[in-house]
Length: 559
Image (cartoon, rainbow, N blue to C red; front, side):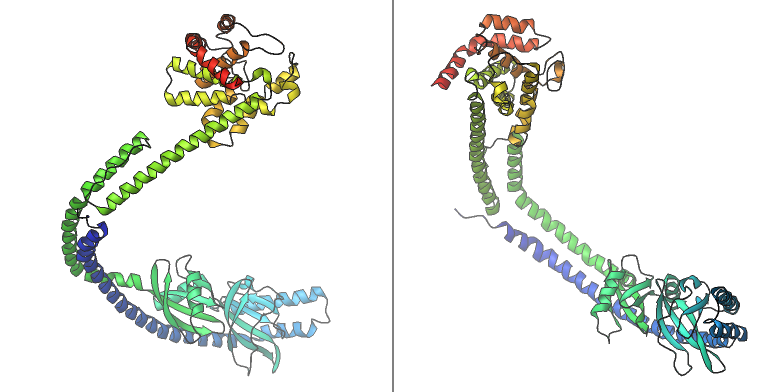
């Protein structure tokens, strides 16, 4: 018998070779070609923007230098600054404050027509005396300006950070009769506003980077860390490159660098490539249409070739899943090696699962019986009580027509119904006479203790409700929750009646066993208040059929 071909071989030959390779190569080649052309175009635009910015920025700096030099020659401002410099050390605080206010008024007057964001006057130690302009508040009085000193009486460019804002400054000496009395600064804030103005000049996105960190940009939020990382990886000589920001690729170029601050322009390669891609789409559509047609034909043929065994396997698995039958097995299709191997593996797994489930069920059942036996061993007068209650509960459940799974829950729950008594002290549990009210309250805690003990094991979850609620009564006077009527789960009602019946018909140290008929009359008398009538009726109907079974259980226990 020849073995069926491998599913992987069919898929590769029919689909991958005929369709995927063709479309993938075409689209990759076209996309890479277009992107490379666009990258070159964007790089050329950045270079042009660099030249434009350099020319405009050079002219702007010359104008600011001329304005700064003119301000430094203002006689009233010089006189006020000179008076303060001469008298500050020997005058009181009030006088110094008045002179500083005079300097501030004069600086406000001369700074009114200046384009800079801040005009700042410092003393010879570069401590701020006064500031004016849009961002004058960033230059607090007394704060030292950390900038390279001015040399040869020439204006100097520099970068400084004041109150969290980075400024590009022009500094000119402030002199009176060739004696330096301070320095005058024209400062331009390198903030979002400046970045937007820079972007409008070069018609691209811009970023201002100081000490490797982006201080302002027109990029999308969250893009700064990626740009910083790309710049940090480049060498000092590199002024351009490509960086991925979010989902887009950007070409970037350094326009100019001043001290530790660089100005960058960025162009989106993806945005620019969209128009180029649209021009190539027409050609690709024809190729893609042919490829899709071929893909449809081959996929349809392959689907027909493979669907039959796969459908059979799927339906078989669905039936097994719906029935929850661990004994079910899959039939081999004979049409696909992989499908048959999967079926064989599944059958082996189900066999192991069936064995494991049987072993687990037996282990849990043994553990339950061991717990019940351990409880009964504490009190010789109640030996076998849990087993008898379990037998009676099963008989009642069968009379009521419960399903097999529900009967099994009742059987095991009845075996464990008094497991909480493990936590009850011997002087209370084994007391030969009647209990005091305090001792009875202690006994009443055993359902809660039992539920807590079993709650740690998921397997016992269906039985926990029986353990916790088997002392609830229809009239609401039971414990621990005081539930009424049908609010009490049926399984707990069944065990409650079986428990009471066995307790009445078993001898205790303080009383003899009650005859069966008398016990039933007591149950009927209390039905509707302490017991549910339909459960009592089911017990009465089931008793003749369980007498021998109960005696057999007792014999096994005594043996």
